[in-house]
Image (cartoon, rainbow, N blue to C red; front, side):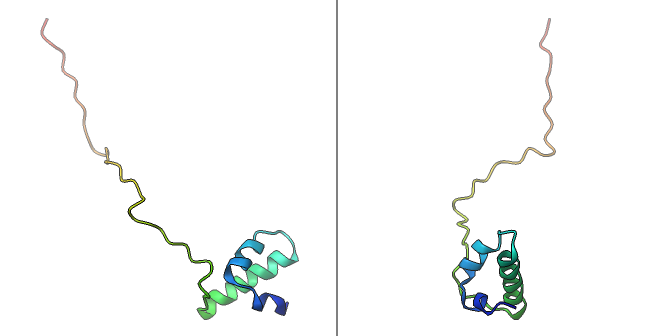
Length: 71
């Protein structure tokens, strides 16, 4: 275990975790360890704004009928 990853913030670990080398592996291991113990330093928290989401009207189950006009 590389102890240098203990001092890094969650945001730094998240950025390093995408690498496909030993540093990335150690960063992913540290992220997993922090999840298991319930530790979060708050630097990588992403907030979703519910007002920014666009709601669309559902069309599931609707029936459209076409009628032919008189001749």
